[in-house]
Image 1: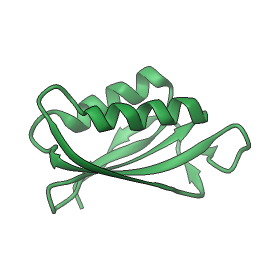
Image 2: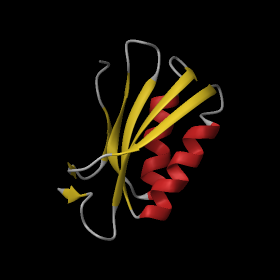
Image 3: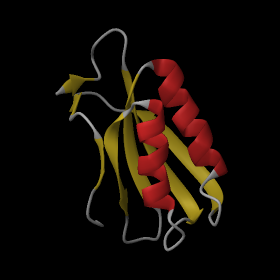
Image 4: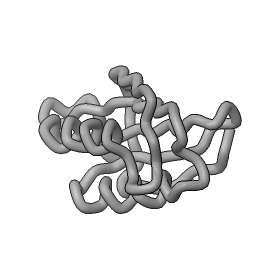
Length: 99
């Protein structure tokens, strides 16, 4: 387990709204997170949005947030909300089931 509470790591919950389902956004997010070496997860939400938690070095998490603002090639991001999320995030970055 990788703690977001370690001094060299942060964790952020990212909530993305727009045309972000059915456009490869989750798989793209997993790919981007792997490229950045982040831990966390991503999932669709029943309201049509996408939610993710990204944990790792602050500069890499901030880069992930910037990439989510731009979105996957076929997506359209209308808004993004970001908040701190405390606790422990499992190693690796995975897709979770829709909630």
